[in-house]
Image (tube, rainbow, N blue to C red; front, side):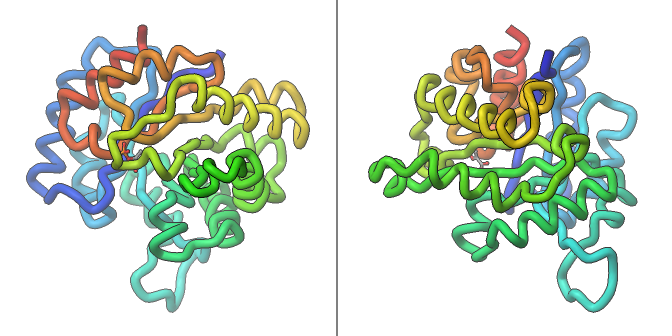
Length: 252
Ligand code: PEP
């Protein structure tokens, strides 16, 4: 049985005071919630404060990126060990904004995934097609290519420690959400890829989140799909009430 996992990607939003205050509200709202894993991923400059505010609670904290080298002359980058040092448990990798705006390739994502796993961080590895690719009927090819490239070379044990997030790019921040059927079809395809590359046990163990305009009013239906194991939430994770509403949808 896969435990649902809801993660909030704050992207480049909020400030120090609002980050800490949001964490405090979430912790209050999460009292009594169990059976769901929950994390927030603030901007890196606020990770330390957010980890401290969340310490001792069920709220986990993740970064939005990491560099694959352990240390050295890499101006502006952060190592996996630094993220662990401040209390992170997760790191989002290969988000479409990093792939499409910052030109990050699946090969780079793959190196980061390996480095994150070696540091005992849980990578949340994003894959997803552009609208033009979906319209051209290439969704499965694109997702398979990103899956193969970003998760290349992982052992079965490493694979089961990673989380995949299917995020159709056309649904991110647009208010346009994939239908539960559209999302489920791709999630099932990903699970089949896991089974053919590894085995049924690995395929059954890996959690696959959906991301793209998840809101309290569509979360429950998406999360009820057999192969959707959680959500990666952007806009609706910036305030406590909608994020808690999505978490409630995962419990039902
Ligand atoms: C995201 O950026 O990962 C995301 C899913 O954003 P939104 O929920 O705002 O579409």
